[in-house]
Image (spheres, each protein chain N blue to C red):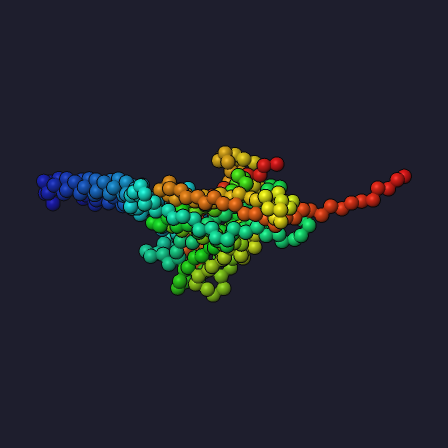
Amino acid sequence: MSLPLRISLIFMAILAGLLMAWGVVSAASGMQTELVLSTPTPLPDQPAVESGSPEISIIESPTASCVLARANTGICFMTWSYLYATADPSYIITMTVQIDDQARARYSGFFQTSMYVPSEMLAFHVDCGAPGSGGDPNLGMNHSYTIRARDSDGLGTANYGSAICPADEPRRIYLPMLQK
Amino acid sequence: MRKLFIPFMFAFLLLIALFGALRVARGQTLIGQGGEIVLNSETQDGNTRQVTAPEGSAPDQPLIGFIDSPTAACVQPDTTKDECFINWYYMSVSADPNYMITMTVTLNDFGFVARYHGFFQTSMYVPYNMNPQGYRVACGVPGSGGLPDWGNTYGYTIRARDSAGLGSANYGTVYCPPYTP
C-alpha cells in the first residue's frame, strides 16, 4: 500500500471517529433534555377556567346524620350518606371535614378527577348534649360542619350545614355516702 | 508495525464510540427507589406513581398498570384521643394476562402495614372495608406535620408486583387532623 493511500485512510478513520463521537454527544445532549422534560410526565392540557363557569362541582353531602349508638354514653356519631365532588378534567386535591370548627378528616386525591367518600369512612364522635342544649327541648346539641374541596386549578367548593343530635348524657353513678 | 497502525486506530475509535453509546443508553433509563428500571412515571402535587421492571428485563410494553388508590384519608373519629386512622377508598391494579403476586402498603414511618397476596388472579382489588377502620396513627399537635392547621403527615408507599417481575408503586402523603389536648 502506498504512503498517500495510508495517510488518506488514517484521515478517513480519524474523521469517521470524530463524526461518530459528535453524533453520540449530540444525541446524548438531546436525550438528556428530552428526559428532563418528559419525567415526570406533564399533566394533560386542561382548558382555562372562565370566571362564572368553574370546573369543580358543588359537593354532594346528603343525609347529614347524628346518631346515638349507645344510650347513656353521651356520645353520638355524625356521618353522611356519602361525600362526592368532581373537578373533571382537573384533579381533586383534597376534601376536608370540619365539625364545630375543628378539623376531623382530610381526604387526599391521588391522580383522580372526582372523589367519593362512603359513609363508612365518615364516622365522627360528637357530644350528644343535654336536652334543649341545641335549642330544641326534645333534642341535644346542634353541631355545625364545613366540608371543603379543592382542585388542581386552585378552585374550591364548600358546604356549610349543621346537624342536631339526639339528647343523651353519660350515666351518673351515685355512690352511697358511707360514714366511718 | 505500520501495517498494524490503521486497524489499531479503527479499533480505538470504535471503542470510544461504543463507550459513548453505552453511556447514552444507560442515561435514558431512570432508576427507581428499589434499584429497578422505571418504565413509566407521573408526578402531581407531591404524589408519584411508577411502573418498574428489574434491571435487564424491561419489556417494551409493560403489562402491569398504575395502582389506582384514590382518596387517601386520615380521619380523627374521637377528638379526646390522639388517634387517627389512615385508609384508602380502594386499591386496585391489573397485570392481565400476567398474575398479580402481591400488593403491599407501607407507612414510611412504621414499615409494612398490609400485604395482600394474589391467588391465580390477574387483577387485585382491595376496598376500604378490608381494613375496617384503617391504620391507627397519632394525629399530632397542630403544625407538627408542617401545615399550621393540621397534625402529623405520613408518607406512604403502595407497591404491587406481578408474575413477570414487573412492579408498580404509588408514593404519596396523607395529612391528619390535629389533636388538641
